[in-house]
Structures are given as C-alpha cells and as structure tokens.
Length: 228
Ligand code: DC
Image (spheres, rainbow, N blue to C red):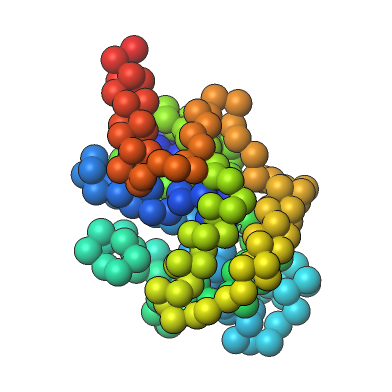
C-alpha cells in the first residue's frame, strides 16, 4: 500500500510534527496531511451537537452522518482543506476545548476505523508526508521512512503556548502543562493504536533543533533509504 515516498511522522502533542511534516512536504514537493485535524473535526462535531463524547455509538453515528473530508492543497492555510458534512472547518479546530475532546473521541475504535480508512485512501493517491500518532504503526506500516518526533515537556508547552497566542488565546503555563500530560496519557494508554514508535521508526528529539534542522535529518533518512 505504501509507495516509495510515504513518510510517517508520529509523536506527542507539541512535538512539532505538524510543522515539520508540512515543511518537509514543501521541501520534497510532496503532499501533506495532519491526521490530527481529522480527529479534531470529529471532536468539533461532537461539541457542536452537544453529543456524549464518551459514547462510541453516538460519536460514530455523528461521524458517519457528517463525514470528514480532506482535500490536499499546500497553498491553503492549513496545507489541506477539511470539512465535516457541508461545513468547511479551519482555525476553530485548534481551540483548547476541541483539543481536549479530540483525545477522548480518538480512543473509540469505531472512530479510528473510519479515519484510518480515509487516511489510507488518501495515501493511495501518491507520495505524502502524513503526521499523527499511529501513522507508522497502523495507517502506513509499510512506509519506508518513519519518524517518531519527541521534545521535552517544557519545550512542548512553550510551543503550544506560542501556537495558541498566535491564534489569540492566552493560557496559563501550568494549566497547559497539566493538559499536555493528560493528553499524552490518554493517547498513550488507549487500547487501540496507542501513541508509540513503530519498531522501525527513527526517534528524533526536536528539543533545541530548528524546524529546518529536523527536516534535513528526515531528508537524510529518505536519501539513505533510497540508496539502499
Ligand atoms: O496532533 P493533534 O494534537 O492535532 O491531535 C489531536 C488528537 O487526535 C490527539 O489527542 C490524538 C488524536 N490523534 C490520534 O489519535 N491519531 C492520529 N493519527 C492523530 C491524532
């Protein structure tokens, strides 16, 4: 299923994977998808419908009734266009309440099944850099290049804070730290597709590295893979 230029980038919240994935896609002229946005879109649906996020059946019914669709387009603000049902979605996907709910709904196997099916269909369309939590382990297990991106908690908190500030939301550092730890816990402890590196993933600690430096390390891995 995975062709030559499929790159899987997984890692915890705030590790910089979406920024790196997008920059890498630009650098290598491939497509890019942040799969977290798809789970966020389902979380937003749940929030807007006032549905019970803990009920797998309710969340799956919503996700089936208002399918999440993605169109890859590097020139759009997110690097892809995303909609749920007939609603185009954007910055609202990155609000804090959506982040919180996304970890809850992402633990439902039925939700993951729907998302993974779509992500694999997208990957079949050609070379792509895909960022998420389970890309190397579940979505594209045959991807020739897999990266597990980490960063210290302090750095991840600082990055999230800067991200949110850019979107006009001020948050308390201690609260953000507790929230990231809780999301890590939920993402890593769920029964289905928990956050963990694939056995053949290269772990890169991005603390203290610039985006460009991380991108170059991944390009080197791609070139090394192509040479063997
Ligand atoms: O990367 P992010 O913070 O935008 O992801 C939002 C949530 O979606 C996060 O709590 C974990 C979940 N997620 C997932 O379970 N699997 C993925 N491939 C991507 C994200």
